[in-house]
Length: 121
Image (tube, rainbow, N blue to C red):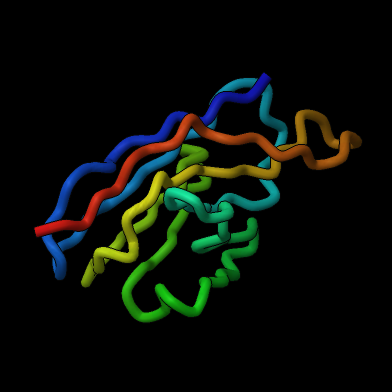
Protein backbone atom coordinates (compact mmCIF):
# COMPACT_ATOMS: atom_id res chain seq x y z
CA UNK A 1 0.00 0.00 0.00
CA UNK A 2 0.97 3.60 -0.58
CA UNK A 3 0.07 6.51 1.65
CA UNK A 4 0.13 10.20 0.80
CA UNK A 5 0.20 12.66 3.68
CA UNK A 6 -0.43 16.33 2.96
CA UNK A 7 0.30 19.39 5.06
CA UNK A 8 0.44 23.16 4.78
CA UNK A 9 -3.12 24.26 4.13
CA UNK A 10 -4.83 27.03 6.04
CA UNK A 11 -6.37 30.48 5.94
CA UNK A 12 -4.53 33.28 4.17
CA UNK A 13 -5.41 36.78 3.03
CA UNK A 14 -5.59 37.64 -0.67
CA UNK A 15 -2.11 38.24 -2.01
CA UNK A 16 -0.57 35.95 0.57
CA UNK A 17 1.38 32.72 0.19
CA UNK A 18 1.15 29.13 1.34
CA UNK A 19 3.29 26.07 0.76
CA UNK A 20 1.73 22.63 0.53
CA UNK A 21 3.71 19.45 1.06
CA UNK A 22 2.85 15.85 0.28
CA UNK A 23 4.98 12.90 1.33
CA UNK A 24 4.51 9.45 -0.16
CA UNK A 25 5.38 6.32 1.79
CA UNK A 26 4.81 2.58 1.65
CA UNK A 27 5.48 0.01 -1.06
CA UNK A 28 7.08 2.28 -3.65
CA UNK A 29 9.35 1.09 -6.44
CA UNK A 30 9.16 4.36 -8.36
CA UNK A 31 6.93 7.40 -8.66
CA UNK A 32 6.08 8.27 -12.23
CA UNK A 33 4.43 11.59 -11.47
CA UNK A 34 3.12 13.66 -8.60
CA UNK A 35 0.64 16.47 -8.67
CA UNK A 36 -1.93 18.62 -6.98
CA UNK A 37 -5.62 18.81 -7.73
CA UNK A 38 -8.24 21.00 -6.12
CA UNK A 39 -11.97 20.93 -5.66
CA UNK A 40 -14.05 23.95 -4.74
CA UNK A 41 -17.63 23.64 -3.47
CA UNK A 42 -20.03 22.64 -6.24
CA UNK A 43 -17.19 22.31 -8.75
CA UNK A 44 -15.38 19.38 -10.29
CA UNK A 45 -11.93 18.40 -9.16
CA UNK A 46 -9.33 19.99 -11.43
CA UNK A 47 -5.63 19.54 -12.01
CA UNK A 48 -3.59 22.41 -10.57
CA UNK A 49 -0.03 21.32 -11.29
CA UNK A 50 1.86 18.15 -12.09
CA UNK A 51 5.50 17.11 -12.20
CA UNK A 52 6.81 13.94 -13.79
CA UNK A 53 9.89 11.97 -12.81
CA UNK A 54 12.09 13.74 -15.35
CA UNK A 55 11.19 17.12 -13.92
CA UNK A 56 8.78 18.40 -16.54
CA UNK A 57 5.88 20.37 -15.14
CA UNK A 58 2.50 21.57 -16.27
CA UNK A 59 0.03 23.98 -14.71
CA UNK A 60 -3.54 24.96 -15.19
CA UNK A 61 -3.72 28.39 -16.82
CA UNK A 62 -5.23 30.15 -13.81
CA UNK A 63 -2.18 29.49 -11.61
CA UNK A 64 0.65 29.99 -14.10
CA UNK A 65 3.14 32.53 -12.81
CA UNK A 66 1.79 32.26 -9.26
CA UNK A 67 2.21 28.61 -8.26
CA UNK A 68 5.34 26.49 -8.46
CA UNK A 69 5.46 22.72 -8.12
CA UNK A 70 8.66 20.98 -7.11
CA UNK A 71 9.71 17.55 -6.01
CA UNK A 72 12.31 15.96 -3.75
CA UNK A 73 12.81 12.52 -5.25
CA UNK A 74 14.94 11.31 -2.34
CA UNK A 75 12.09 12.05 0.07
CA UNK A 76 9.23 11.07 -2.28
CA UNK A 77 7.79 14.48 -1.52
CA UNK A 78 6.10 17.06 -3.71
CA UNK A 79 5.61 20.71 -2.86
CA UNK A 80 3.29 23.40 -4.14
CA UNK A 81 4.40 26.96 -3.49
CA UNK A 82 1.38 29.22 -3.90
CA UNK A 83 1.96 32.96 -4.17
CA UNK A 84 -0.36 35.89 -4.90
CA UNK A 85 -3.30 33.84 -3.71
CA UNK A 86 -6.79 34.86 -4.77
CA UNK A 87 -10.19 34.07 -3.25
CA UNK A 88 -10.91 31.86 -6.26
CA UNK A 89 -8.02 29.62 -5.19
CA UNK A 90 -10.11 28.55 -2.20
CA UNK A 91 -10.61 24.79 -2.37
CA UNK A 92 -9.63 21.47 -0.90
CA UNK A 93 -6.26 20.57 -2.40
CA UNK A 94 -5.50 16.90 -3.02
CA UNK A 95 -2.12 15.33 -3.62
CA UNK A 96 -1.92 12.68 -6.32
CA UNK A 97 0.85 10.25 -7.17
CA UNK A 98 1.22 7.71 -9.95
CA UNK A 99 3.21 4.91 -8.31
CA UNK A 100 4.78 1.66 -9.48
CA UNK A 101 5.08 -0.81 -6.63
CA UNK A 102 7.33 -3.13 -8.65
CA UNK A 103 9.42 -2.71 -11.81
CA UNK A 104 6.82 -4.57 -13.86
CA UNK A 105 3.63 -3.26 -12.30
CA UNK A 106 1.66 -0.56 -14.10
CA UNK A 107 1.47 2.83 -12.46
CA UNK A 108 -1.47 3.27 -10.14
CA UNK A 109 -2.99 6.48 -8.86
CA UNK A 110 -3.06 7.24 -5.16
CA UNK A 111 -4.68 10.20 -3.40
CA UNK A 112 -4.08 12.11 -0.23
CA UNK A 113 -6.83 13.00 2.19
CA UNK A 114 -6.98 16.64 1.12
CA UNK A 115 -6.05 19.89 2.80
CA UNK A 116 -8.21 23.00 2.94
CA UNK A 117 -6.91 26.25 1.50
CA UNK A 118 -9.03 29.32 2.20
CA UNK A 119 -8.17 32.72 0.76
CA UNK A 120 -10.19 35.42 2.44
CA UNK A 121 -9.83 38.81 4.09
